[in-house]
Length: 277
Image (cartoon, rainbow, N blue to C red; front, side, top):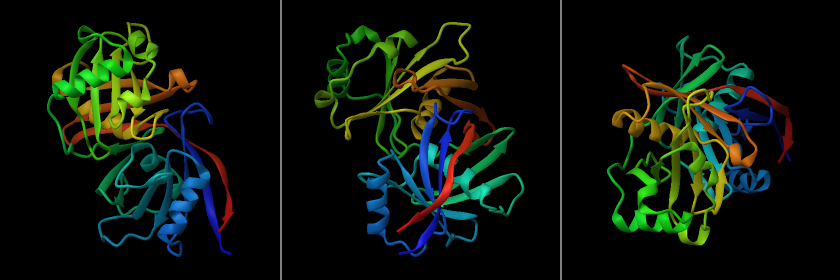
């Protein structure tokens, strides 16, 4: 049995509990893939990550990301949470303002932006309007009429996300999914908040393949921003609220600049210790 440094951090919230947690195992070179899968099932979090030495000379560290169902090429809140854990453990980046993470999706740039960490949104692998049968299935899964859906789009940057825009945040918050009908789609739903709210839009992430709602989702917000900013639904800098129905208070900060879209949020360490494996 070996001991490994273990961190559990909360992402997209300044407080320890209202965001989305990720478990991080440091210096995980001696763990097998089977052990990584087993630990991800044991933590039962949406993601558990493993920090490794990079094999790309441009990267500062390598990250493997596992859900209880298997390995993921990329995920947003695990990227920010793992970067925070790596820095807290004494990680030193090659460039003073940019940390480079190597993962299955490639090299991901991460910046310190005041109290935030922010990652560069990866490119979409699928875009364009949803097919009519997909829209109809989504509408049926939430008991929506066609007029409730303002716009729809494929926004897939790896996990298979599709998305719909509703008229208001209240509509988004009132949704109750029929998981059997939604399967196998991973769906993001967004709607605008009225003026005076601290967020511009409300977002919910329904993972049809797993039958659960994710509290705060970096990858979905990254791909939504690429669509919503381009279509003019939101400004080039905006804040998304997510997790409200799950009694979370996630806040994702998005902005488009000359080098792309950056997805940021606050990260706080909640557990720091060791794990025996």
